[in-house]
Length: 379
Image (cartoon, rainbow, N blue to C red):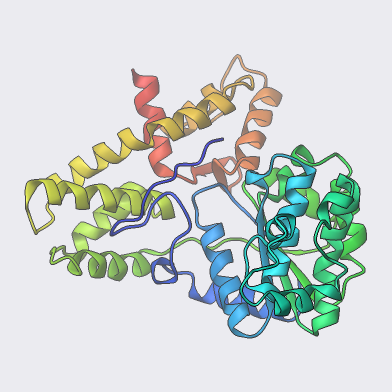
């Protein structure tokens, strides 16, 4: 699935946000920092665009402030086993060298690098030298990468915290045995904690909770809290006021109702309302501005929603079940075998498209996606 990348304006959209835009996450971030600082590994699963990565980067930033080493790698970006190994090694070595692509510098034999002598001293005890990576096979390099967090933690007497994003995609980028290989290295490491993120909730839950899986009970699985209206309202009012735009609390509550409080959709809707105001020259938000902003946001989100629908619709009955749930109707209907409906519901739950609120009752994680489904089927 593609990711929407956009430049950050008044309301950041399309990527990780800065700490001042992490709405309603403070208690959760403090909890994560405390757990990881004590050496407890954590797993967070949920659909894309709900703020997992933003939270994780803020957690790593705070841990660095406390003196820990950190490393962050994203399986969404890798093209293969060697690419992953390079990324993990570079992320780990940056704690010592302050350089993002240490291996590239070694490959280029940049001995004239400013402070080069100091740079060499920092690495020699790790058996890394010019030509280090080229001398190793893909598997040798991967094993070294997986061992390196533990090596650094031990040599430098530091806590090392490693974050893996889109962790469920590791086998697709490396090989089918990668989880067993990782677990073998990780379980022997001291003073290293891992933060695992994944957008395919069903796969992540199975990986960490089923006995047959390599990472069974390796990490604590924590639910990602939603953002309350009480957190959204003052944030949105303050952001608009910073540009001399007036908005009352009731109007903000209408914005939140339309977006359902979904992190990225709320930011995106506010952003579209803001650009509507820039174009009209108005400085007070009205229902008309909210309505137009909503229409523009839905048009811009359509490619993302279409991609989700196309992916889900490859499975029998899923489109029909989605539509019935979007209407607020019972997913089970006469003439359709209950097992087929159940499989469709399980898929939607596993992909975090819907959440179960009670037996036989479900809500959409992303209310704007629910509205999009209704519009598409009605056409």
